[in-house]
Image (cartoon, rainbow, N blue to C red; front, side):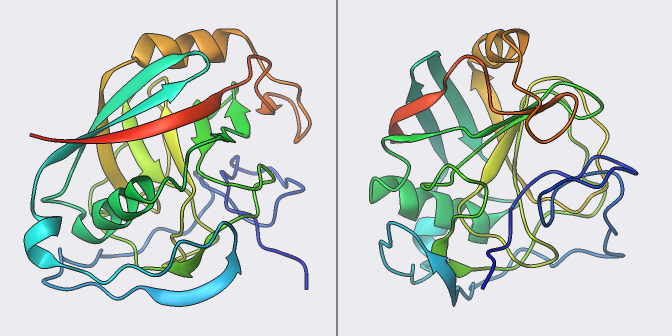
Amino acid sequence: MKRKHWSLLLAATTLPLATSVGTAAAAPATSPAPAASCTYTPAVPADNFKGIPVFDAKKAARPYSATLSTSQGAIKFEALTDKAPCTTFSFRFLAEHDYFNRTHCHRLTTQRLWVLQCGDPTGTGSGGPGYSFPDENLTGATYPAGTVAMANAGPNTNGSQFFFVWKDTKLSPAYTPFGRVTAGLDVLQKIAAGGEDDQNGPGDGFPTLPVDIKRVRISAH
């Protein structure tokens, strides 16, 4: 079976990736309200499987920041635990189980969309953690520089892949925003300035400056 790709779709452009984030994607009329509990559903693929989280509403409500130590510098973001509790709980679960360690960001876009995509342990754009969960925080969602949001393969298919917005971008509200960069936007812009190899099309490919994630550290506020 051919794997789905979690990615970013350029408007009016067909990529060799099965699905993506972009202005061409259909936006839901409403988004789910923050849930008192979340369901994580077993799904394939299950790359570097760490188990399936069991939602804990009390822990999910605790504010935290995540710091990604990368080969290009540190990137820190504040998790929007009050707006996207299922997503931030999942990210924290994976980070605390070293899921993102020794992975790399596999996609950079430098035309029309301005994002760096990470979170796939296979580095192919088709990897996932072995579970999926619903979208959140979509009503009125915008994607200014510094946004951290989920990549997906269609509605309610969130897994482990996420992206950083390094320059204000216009996307349909179909990708759960779950964080805000508080340090390291200059690192993202340096990576973007280095360019990419166009392997997915003009302005869309593997970053020229390798972005290896050494470690993700979670810090309580």
